[in-house]
Amino acid sequence: MSGTVLRIGGVCSLRNDSPSRVVFEPVPDRLPDLHLADSSPDFNRIRSVDFVDSAATLVPPCLHMPPIRKLLVANRSEIAIRVFRSATELGIRTVAIYAHEDRYALHRFKADEAYCVGAEGEPIRSYLDIESIVAIAKENGVDAIHPGYGFLSENPNLVRACDAAGIKFVGPTSEILEQLGDKTSARRIAIDAEVPVLTGSDKPLVTADDAESEAKRLGYPVIIKAAHGGGGRGMRVVREPKHLR
Image (cartoon, rainbow, N blue to C red; front, side):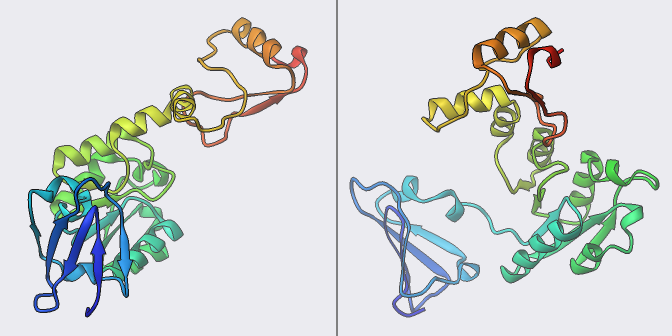
C-alpha cells in the first residue's frame, strides 16, 4: 500500500497507518479525473471515506455506494460464468439461477449459490421471469443483479423491479434503457451527441407508403428493421422498389 495515491478531482490518499480509510482533499477548479500512481489500491479494504472541505460533490458515485457482497447473475451458461469469475476475484459471493432444463448446466455449479427459476418446460421464459428472479434475490440477501447480455439486459422493467426491491442493477438506468431501446430515439441521441451515424430515417415508418417515400429519398438498397429491438432478427435488405412491400 505504500506510495499508492488515488486522485479523483483532487487528491484521495490511502493512509499507510489505516489502509481501510480514504481521505479526499479537493483541488479547486478541477474536473473529476482518475489517476493511479505506483499500484492500484485494494478497494475491498476501504470501509470509510473522509471528505475535506465539502469535496463530496467531486467524488465519483463508486465511493458513495455500499459494497456489493452478493451478486445474482440473471443469465446462463458462459455469460454467467464470466461474471461469476470477475465477482469472485473481487471477493463478491455469487448466485446463479437456472431453468429446470439447465439443472445440470455448468453455470449452476460455478456459483456459490444456485436456485431454480420458472416452471418446467419453459426454459427461455424462466430467464425472463422478472418477478421470480427478484423474489429469489430478496429471499437470499442479494445486493445486486447483473443481467449479462441478451434476455433481460435491455429490459427497463427489470431495473424498475430492482429499484423497488432495494437491489442494485448492474447497468444503466431504466430511462437510459428506454431511450436506447427505441432505435429512432437512440439515433437522435447519437446525432445530438455528434456521433457519426449512417444515413437513415429519423422517425418510425408506420405505413408501406411511408417506407416507399423514405427509401426513394435515401436510394436503394435499403435495410428495413424494427424500431424496437429484435436482436438483428427481422432485418431485411431491399434492393429494388418492387421488393419493398
